[in-house]
Length: 100
Picture 1 (cartoon, helix red, strand yellow):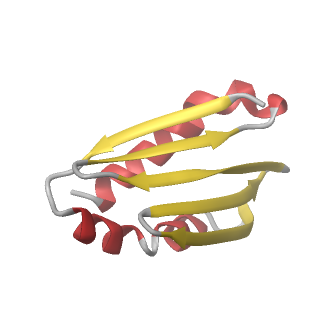
Picture 2: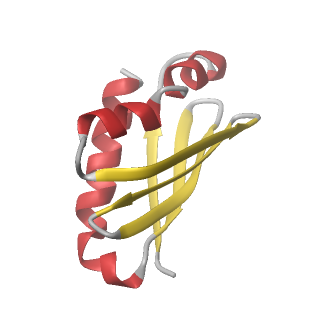
């Protein structure tokens, strides 16, 4: 399965960044109503394990809150490869706004 990776730096404590990210998946679901379904999220320490379906594709991965950056590593179905850049840029944009 193809991988996607997004890194977003932040200038706050790791705890503050984690707190801001607690609603990240919900915000994605709200912003893209009708386009995103089957949303799941689970926090394990400083790592958010998430999954959602969009346009028939299931996207899943981990959002790791580190000391000064957030690193998203995820899996994309082969059929979604042509949308990889768009998916990564949308996620990066949303994370950047949330952690500003």
